[in-house]
Image (tube, rainbow, N blue to C red; front, top):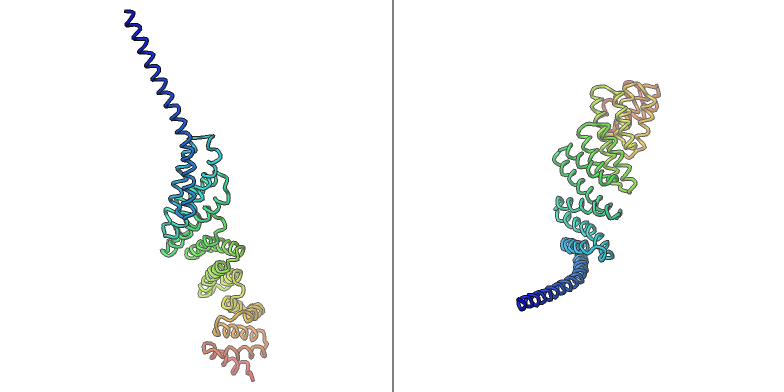
Length: 337
């Protein structure tokens, strides 16, 4: 019995010694693993940097993400490295998205940019967030352009509104809205969109967009005025023409139409003022210029100013369109020399 008890004690002692040795091995293994894991985080970060420099942005994102995952497990021990990795992830995503846009893969680019925007916002990286948001806005503007080509006006406006949400200074988004509202014959909405496009474009020295927006609005109101003139609604036509002039004050054709309406309303002084102003603008066509001369002649004739009437009828007679009326007035009515 005593021998059996002694053997049990010896056996337990040996077992405890082996367990203690095993625990010691595990402990030292864990410490070694901890040190290696921290090194791994640094290596992954460096891999990300190398991929970023080589413009392999997808691989860079993967390396940075793996490095961040390790750092999150390490906690305080990786506090110096973690923020560096965090910043590089959205930065890499922005660059990767640019490459995707260049490859016409805009849908994937949009998803990645939205992720980058949220991550940058969380980090307080305002400049990086703005860069991501502007790229998102540009993609939605591209979508709006495609929808415009398909004459899907509602879809154009929807995408433009998304673009403006991301970038309130997107002049092209406002321009597409103006174009779509013009097609929809929504004068108020078209005017508001065109005015914003012009305001933002002028602030960015974007003469092309500003000029296009002015042309869109001006053309809209001139077309509307022509319909009103056909219906003999001259007062309403003048209102529409004044709206066109507010966007393009030096339009010879618009001023010509206005002078014609003023003559029909017997507002001869205003017709003369408008016609003379039209003659100071750059000529768009000889036909329009001779039409202005005809309106001046009519107004001067109505006011009893024969000398000026004869002068401008003679100029108007240079056009085949107006020659018959102008010649008849000079010969049979005014007896011009």
